[in-house]
Image (cartoon, rainbow, N blue to C red; front, side, top):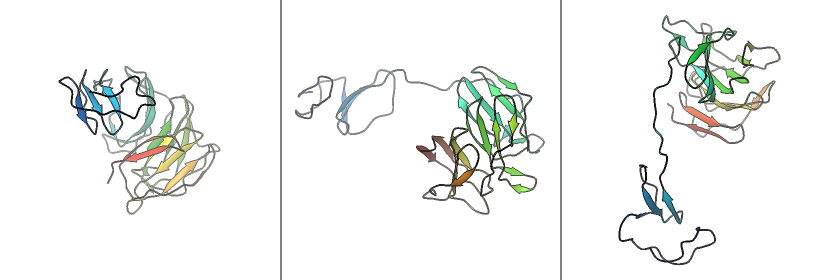
Length: 221
């Protein structure tokens, strides 16, 4: 490798040539493995892969359910709703402490499945989903102990298999299934929902993350 190396700040001159060994020259990033070193010509950056993570088994939920909602962090998260083994619309809520799940006494006011949620373990938000009566517009807030619908506005469009992100005071709901895949996006301000910019492609059963002003949707049907 020739040209200027330094800390790669303010340098754009020089040339990059294939080294005698040890560093790969490429225009993208490879599949990561511990200790791998390469030079990305597109980013003009020398990179090293370190602390490559892996998935490990955590504690299981106490009540098996599918299409639950939840959010939080790896060490403090919550799960709510879903469809249980008896095919009932579940209202159960559980909290995870980084090791194990614990049933909490505060269940959802209305059992729903294919529900979405966002926020934290002590300030959560759940919205949408399905009940025995069909697609739900219901929204509930969680304070770490109990769920409430007091002064909580409902979604404008009832749907299930939706997703969301953000916080209890600045939430975002997007995608889902009404009678077909939906592109509807709604924003929550802590008391009511309003229309946001629609997805480019109507979808459902996808994933989401981020904040109300910097959200991400991926996958789906």
